[in-house]
Amino acid sequence: MSASSTGRVPLVGALLLALASALVLALLPAGVALDRRIDGVLRATAIEDLGRAPMILEDRTAAREEALTMHAMSVATTAGVAEALAAGRGDEALAMASATAAMYGEDPVLVAPDGSWLAGPPLPDEAVEEVRRGGAPVLYLDDGDMPRSVALAPVGGGASEEAAGWMGIAGTSVPMDSTLATTLAALARADVTLIGADGRLVASTLSADTAQAVTSAVAAGAARALSEKVDEVMTGVGAIWVAPAEVPGAGTVLFTRAVDEELAALPGVRRSALLAGALTLVLALGVGVVVALSLARPVGGLAAAAGRVAEGDFAAPVPASNIEELDRLGRAFRTMRTSLQARLAELAEANTALEDRQRRLAGLQAELIRQDRLASSARMAAELAHEIRNPVANVRNCLEVVRRGLPEGSESTPFVDMAIDELLRMHELAEHLLDLNRPIDPGAGDCDPVEVARQVAMLAAVGDTSVEVDVRADPGVPRVPIPPDALKQILFNLVDNAREAAGSDRPIALAIRVDPATVTLDVLDRGPGIDPEVAAHLFDPFFTTKDAVTGVGLGLFVAEGLARRYGGRMEAGDRDDGPGARFRVELPRQAAAPGAADPESAEPGRAE
Ligand code: ADP
Image (cartoon, rainbow, N blue to C red; front, top):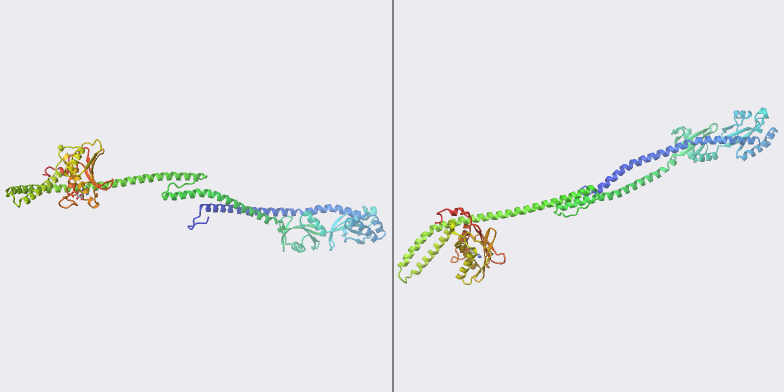
């Protein structure tokens, strides 16, 4: 999944990167918002909860006041207390009052009828006045040692001084100490710090240092208001929320909560959220890998198949996909590949046809050039023959006269005979050459090629009994538009050459085949075949590889000229079935239009 050296990222990598980026971008703000929300809710709940603590104090105070009043009444009506006070036995009265107060776990308050103080904190004048009027007040005061709640009642329980006579004040006092702090802390689920009326620290459920820090901060007015009832102060151990509740005359109760403790759940929540986020990311990436692979596999397969098409392989498998668009793409690719393959095949076929045509054209062109060359040669040869035929005849006639004039047994007679023979050969040669250029006589006739072939085979055997010419013909060979003498001369020249090339003891085959438009005659021998260097000049006039006595080089030239003259053609090559040469004469089944093969050859008077 690493980036390739070209800096391009694979599809799977790109998809996973996009997925991871999208998840991180979505999860991060959501996580931050959630964190803020939880933080806000925790703070608001804690602050609201702490804000209710003073009301808890109020409720408890109200409840406690009734109990305290009853305790005070109980002490004031303790049997014997009134009598002892009236008799001036203060100590005795105090002992009895203390015993009753001790039952409630409280301290006694006792003032003699003359106003002398026996026990309890110093009482304010208003309170004393109220008791004198028969009241039973509960008051809060701080004597500098300890803030207290004090309940008073007239000794003897008299309703008023007038009614029962004034017998002094009795009651109970409860210190507002660490016990109260602990009780309130339990009720309010907060730390509690008690501060005296003069601002000193009295008791606290906090550690001494923290309690002192909170007390000093509140005293210095460094608290920042968070709500109507809750402030925040900064201490050495962190921020602390404070809900103060004043107890008039006694001091202040501070309900506190450490911010860190209140938000202690937050790091845990954050850790869980982070874990959940990471898990989500991992799970999403896992699912992403599966999805990305199912996307990348067909795409990669397509790319590979396209690459293989470029190398000419049209059969590479194109993977199917469950994703509709990718599957469609795959099907479209397969269709495109099939039609491309078909087009390429058509193109290759057209190319082959074109090459074939070009080859045939080149062959035709070469054949035309060859025929043109041979036709020119034939014309020239005929003109030469025409020029030399008559002088040769004249010289021969003269020699005949000379021969007749020679005495019997003259030494010159054999030489003159030899000269006459040679002149006869020259004359025949000239006649052959003239034949090539004679206009076609429309009535010259046609012949049965099989019959002519058999005659040639027979003639060859008459000349040399060891020569064997095997004539093979297709059934139903038609007549061909060439005079029998012309065809005989052609075949005789070919058979003669075959005999010379192969030797008289090797059979020569003469095969006649019928095609829709032509009749083909093949003369086949078992000689050395056609020498490649000779092949190009076979039909040239006077071309021979034989010595001056046996070869003149006009046999093939005359044969080819005759074949062409009657609308046919000739070619030479090696046999298909083993060593040996094959000379082929192709003749049309229908006569060609007069002069069609060589228009110039038809000019009247040129041949004679
Ligand atoms: P000539 O027979 O007087 O040489 P041709 O025109 O008949 O003249 O033949 C020309 C040449 O073609 C021959 O000299 C020979 O080299 C070659 N040739 C002709 N027929 C054959 C054959 N059947 N096998 C091999 N070469 C041949």
